[in-house]
Length: 328
Image (cartoon, rainbow, N blue to C red; front, side, top):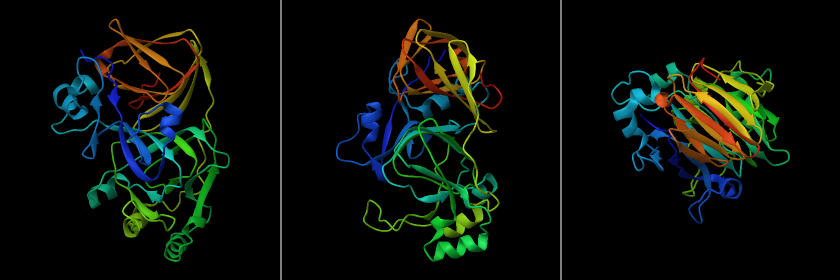
């Protein structure tokens, strides 16, 4: 039986990144690099997660999918199939590019991958904002014209945000994370991005970064005007409370908060679960072994895990990701 799995983070240098993942979550970042992304659970050609400890330490997630795919996912796995989700923490020291991810049909046509994602704000500076969707009334023609004359940022709708805010970003929604935020990102396993505008800055190589305007114009949902933040409320459950965040065909996501002294049973019910600690510490007990997750820690519960015990001696918060329709 596969135990709960933790992985070594993969750090990605980004022109807009910083050093805040070390300050906020104690991540051991490479020295002298601007780290924009910590890939916490990934099964991509650009980076595959390696198990950090336990009987499978040193094995990567692609190997686990090849040898234990059915035990991980609770269903038959096709040859070469990859783990379905990619989970990151982002440090946006500067604004990210204005961009869009393709819907499934366009991705197939263009040889990419569709990408739906959600953002949970862990920290936000005063006046930090997210750009999501278009201002009401913006047309495709107007958007294309302002892209060409360098004023396209004025077409974007935005929200000022604070810690605890959540945004759902389906494929086709133009978006950008603004400066001064640390964000948990749960997404479809994809790295296909069509960049619309990059604030006229240069990349790590000193040259302007590529734009993908024709692909972006084909991908954007031009009827997606002024989408709101997720506005759901918490509900009381044993030892704390739960807030539903996303119900989608790609994944369900809830945010949980636990009180000091929490001890709660969680059953995987034959489906994978992913836990990401947003604050405090969370202990996961399984088969007599305790796995301690600090803030910024991620754990994959394989489908065959069965029942685990979640406990904490201090206030804790965590994201819980499951396949659709089994949120608990």
